Length: 139
Image (cartoon, rainbow, N blue to C red):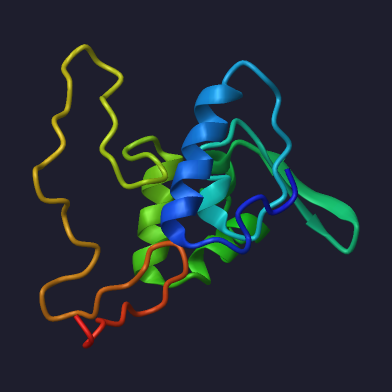
């Protein structure tokens, strides 16, 4: 899929991503993406530069590669977004920010109010774009 969600709002993006994950769970999906969150829970990621494959491995492995291209791309999104992306890659949360059950038999319950990505005195940041959220004064 080539940028299947590139020109849609985040809510529609989430719906499309969920549909892809459920309806194609038993298929090989090749995703071309610029939003890193889109591929963070993939089995493997290919990082290309100038038409050449420069990295190929599971996202968690690529994120932990010191001086790696993919790791640098994650870090370049900003501290809060990078933390969010790393949590997706390590399996703590899904791409929608939902807490996943642990690998053990003890389920992890999702808090009723999601933990903020920013402290109370920090501006809220959209984890997918690392842009500051703007409140609509018209409401």
